[in-house]
Amino acid sequence: MPTWLRLAEGPVFRFALAVLLLGLFRLAALSLWGMAASIRRAGDRRIPYLELLVETLGWLFPVARLHRTRRFYSYASFAFHLGILAAGLFLANHLEILHANTGIRWAAMRKPVLDALTLVTFIAGGYLLLHRIYVASSRRLSKASDYLLLVVILNIFGSGFLAGRGWNPLPYDGLMLFHTLNGVLLMLVIPFTKIAHCVLFPVIRLASEAAWHLTPRGGSETIRTLYGPEGRKI
Image (cartoon, rainbow, N blue to C red; front, side):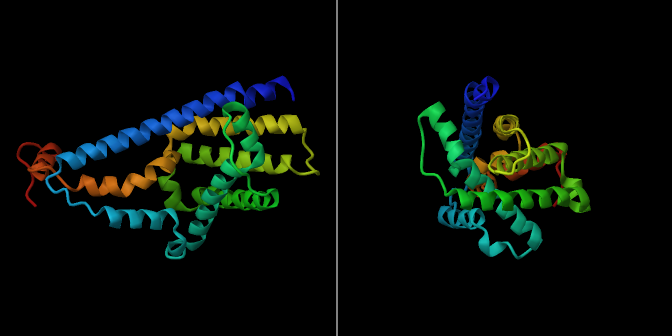
């Protein structure tokens, strides 16, 4: 293995992994601390935890919701997320790098299954990118970082799929360096972009519910903050 590829899969990977884990831990800890403080100060602490858990699980596995609105976009988004999780967590090559750097390893998925998921994810990601470019409502809500993240992920899946083909026309080591550096870049930016919802999403519903359980006089204080001492009639 060339030295530059060994460096990318070794020290550079370990640095990116540390940034990823510490960044996500910080976000989760701050969110949980803020929610605990909100619940502690709330005037009404009757929060329907079981109902919120069921609703959260319904959104984590939204199979029954996919066809309700923007059917093709919903299915593409679901396939995209599923493929990212499967390839990122269960590809044998990824697990070998993880084991070499941390000593941690778990069972890998079979290669034909992951090859199929990789191809589906690449197609779904391409559709999502084109949707952001050509659909006005989606384009208005998109930032430059949204396009950049999709391009980086497509680079990862495209190069990873090519690297595993016998008919790959590109130099293997160069392609793997491109693949690894894109993966490292993604790991570095996850805690600072909307992809951080991978750890924040399970607590979003609880945070939203807790936010509406205001402290005594919380409504009046909110109005005074927003509209000044004269307030606003409702």
